[in-house]
Length: 325
Ligand code: SD4
Image 1: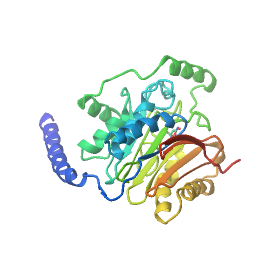
Image 2: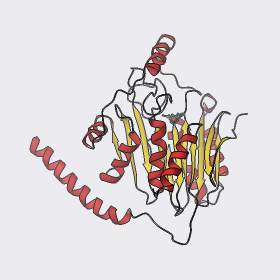
Image 3: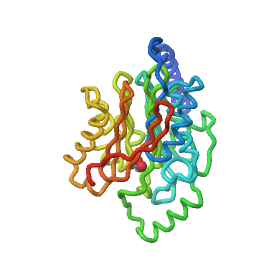
Image 4: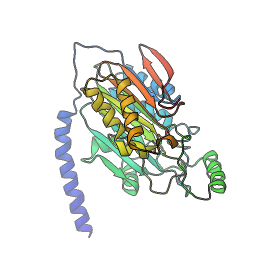
């Protein structure tokens, strides 16, 4: 058994080595020396303002769009007052804080962790999955094991405030999983750096009081986040089940590939939900997107979704238009 495990570990490392060697070449992020862009960031919700600042600062200091995406969402993950991202996130119905995150770089590489517990910065674990393994997605105890091997610290992520909310919920909801329009503030963030290259990150503790083991859209490439450096990037927030059923951000990027403005692309992806999923009125979903040219847009089902845009040195919070008024 041990031998088999060592063998598997050995061959995996060898495969990872080969992959890494080729990736080192392909991961040299495309540079276009003639175009100099002002870095730009778009992200979900009001906490996106702070995340955008960190992201822009990172890129101003020479970080790539991928570094900027990771640096931005780490701010939200570290905030104990944000109750659906990182430390302080609402637990599942059994009291466990379980986190989902993913990241995508301009070369099309991506990394993801799902159902990860005890690690404050799942986005940085996702980045390690992308940069240091031959895989895209690690889950649960395997993701935790990998994080610990990488040197991440094991922490208690359930704050007193989140525990209190969970205990209150248990009384009223009698342990029944409830999914609703409120309680969303996942961060999804798309960056464009000095070279005009695009990357993105998305991180969440998921739906509040979800069933143990539930994974949402946020760590799924093409659902919670998708970036194509030739076209644009999009991120999602809201009820992940609807985003998963329609592969929302992949759809937004594909609409942009067809030449649609990011605003129209977000609207059409929301319309896909409206036209396909009869219970859409019971849930909120919001998309925001940016294309290669720096055009942007957002759209959601219910009023109430807003997004933060850092463009031309200004960081502003913008209310998204919605399908239902
Ligand atoms: C999920 N989409 O797990 C996430 C939750 C979310 O803002 O976005 N909240 O379904």
